[in-house]
Length: 566
Image 1 (cartoon, rainbow, N blue to C red):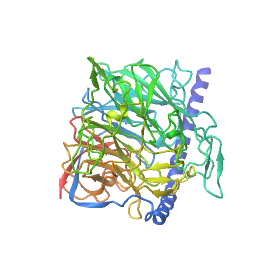
Image 2 (cartoon, one colour):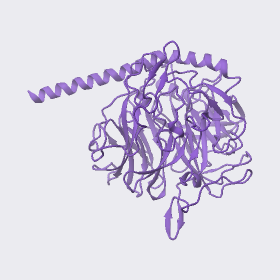
Image 3 (cartoon, rainbow, N blue to C red):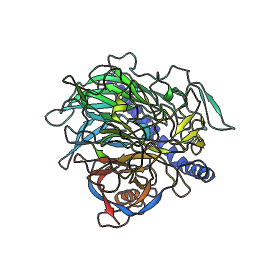
Image 4 (cartoon, rainbow, N blue to C red):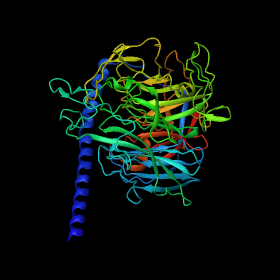
């Protein structure tokens, strides 16, 4: 009877969890149209005075997309999925795909897709609770994976509702309880929140997510061994834990593995949309809004490498001197791994002790041939791709600043090349509002390589991914895309500290050179048919040979991309 009772109780819990998931998805479906109307009305009112320049189509360059393969995805309704691709595995020469929401990992090698870990089939590491639920887009049972120090080692970052066995507290905690209050919703529904990092049940006035219960979660880093069959072996080793908040907002996850066991990880700003991040992203003693430099060879060890980063979900390393003075069409090359400096026969990812990082004079170039590039999802003003020399990012004696969050010295928050207001949490469309354009580079801040915003013609929801590939592109130095429209976007210019490079929209064609007017969203229609709403969430990436690809989250299909001349 006890066994039957426990079985019945487990089934009831699973049914309740499923109902909650479906309820969140339904809420998103019914309120998203209203959110679009709100955003468009705001765009019309503010586009002229406080937004990036609109993007026009480039006439001489196009993009061809060709289908390569797919992974299973049982959830193809709008807003019901959360998948990703991990392309920074140079040692193994493999590509990995994640069903982040369902906790599944797939490898792709020699045209073969293989599932190598599944939370429903494999042993979950000791102490972790992966049974939590949330909005699909914020549910990361498996958040990211990275290559380890050895060829047969892989690092998996889980999101758990509990700490792993052996940890009594996180290595990188949230701000102290109650340290950062705020207000959600605009008048007449404005509501005081005592702690924006522990928000509790969201007020009903919050766009799309009113009534959602927020709670503390943990990003837990593990070293796994890959066995002879290609599967992830049991008994992985944990080495680092970050505390975050399960909230409809910014949970980061952009990551990069470096030589010597070092890892760059974007935390996200740990709170809901609508805020300007408050002071924590600019505070050097907090981890929210930061890129961390984690040492996988020492449990709990990390430094802060960059601050003012809102919600980066993708990083890449490229080789080639970073242009810092004059914008040119000179391209940077995709790097197949990065090696640290050699000093006294030892390999190190740090510059010599006591030295600080400084940018060279305007018009000159960095002596370090490696550059970190990462995307950063914006609020309502500017979506960004940023670039910084690896020499600077690895020299943690100076923390590189990308502007997000309220600076304690001048009280300003920066998004792209704009100052923005504090904002009301939980408001889509106009929060945090743009206040003023920044017309010249500011000392102490790194301006984006590119930025783009919303216009009455282009309802861009947010940047989702980017790719740099000499193997696939000729004139294009950087290509990116965004969640909602399926547009392919790009620039022919390299990074310049004088200001963002000029961006363009790019016409997309299928393998038969048939135009795809809805961009990557046409690929959703091709796979799913007439489903009415075709947003597919296109994730750009690099194949192991350096060529460019795109992974459509909604369908699980991945493709090859090639620049073409029109």
